[in-house]
Length: 178
Image (cartoon, rainbow, N blue to C red; front, side):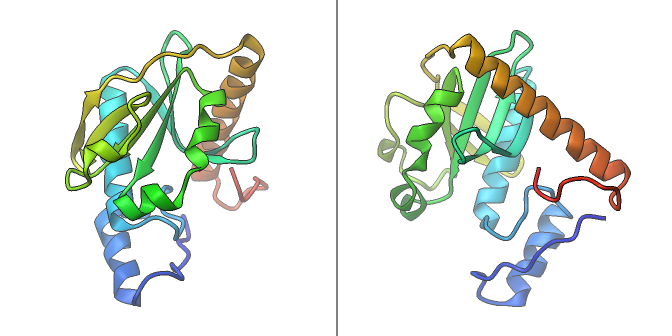
């Protein structure tokens, strides 16, 4: 069983209960995401899966940053999707600029009520809700260096494997942060 931490930013315990009941015991939820961000992430993952990509959420990167979603295609192409749930969220967090060095294509994912013009033109754009998403702007390609690709593929594979192990054996000797 995954234990969910209370969100210190939530206005009340009811908000936490709403998140748990709405999204179940989601591995995406660690107390930092809003209900909107969780919905956008879920819909974006559904879109990426329909496009033939496998996803890992909240993947720690070699730079020390953490990518909201990392998607891997059959040919090894790597996309990073940065979830932004509001204009304030976009303006408050500019770490996404560092993500380009870890992917072939960078995208933003947001809710339908967030103005699209705030997002940079040199990144893809997904508009999502909890049920699905649309790719409204294709992400431009900037190919990774071979050594960086290998590092990212290994990070992706190890994170996915550790998370599966933790689901199968939640009390096992696995790292708490994967």
